[in-house]
Amino acid sequence: MKDMKMFIKNYIAHRGLYTNDIPENSLEAFLNATNNGYDIEFDLQLSKDNKIVVFHDDSLLRMCGVKKRIDALTYTELKQFKLNNTSATIPLFTDVLDALPKSTNLMIELKTGSKNRRLVALFLDTIKRYNFNYIVQSFDPRLVHMIKKNAPTIARGYITKNNHLNCKIISFFIKLLPIHTWIKPDYYVYKITDLPNKRMDKMNKKGVLVFSYTATSKEELESIRDRYDNAVFEGFRP
Image 1 (cartoon, one colour):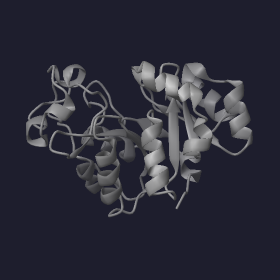
Image 2 (tube, rainbow, N blue to C red):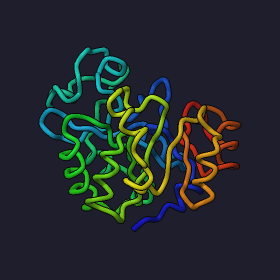
Image 3 (cartoon, rainbow, N blue to C red):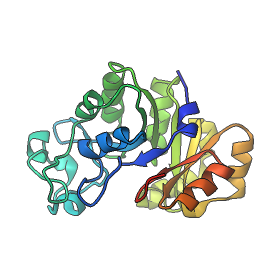
Image 4 (tube, rainbow, N blue to C red):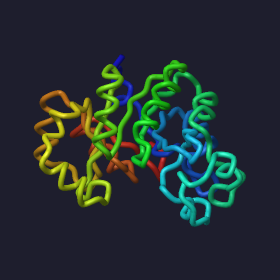
């Protein structure tokens, strides 16, 4: 069922409520968010052995100081690395779902890769075993279309930016494609510096929700909530 009211009403912590001592996309960041009354946004991708892990980047370099790709390592190998020199490790999707209060609303981003169909299939098989209110989004319209095709009742969002996926072929394809007709998103997610814009004003008036990433101050967050629907936040507490 598509229940998006809470994603408009509540505050959504980007990659959890992380700090200098609590790394992003960690169990600790997610529990810190829920303990402070916030919902959460996080990222999913596949390890080499097809485990769904919660991690944003393609590479471990920024968060773990290791120049290796997530999809080149098994989960047994991945969990040996520490996030930002803390004791926290990369969690499995199921670790997060098992740890969170069931009242938490989840904004879930699917990261694009070489095994998109496998990611969507495993995601849908996993999430159906839990009773969370959630929405799913991606920068890759192919992933959004897969959700539409395989689970049309799940609220789906398209994240957009000027240089889609840093890929010239996909960017060219997206410019030619009537995205809204093809994937029929329930909502769009725009970079905060790309709002406001006339296209999203028009879509919002038609009933399509508009969210933004990432508000880094109370002023930015409230300006988006005043004109559109909501924005994920980081670096402060609303």
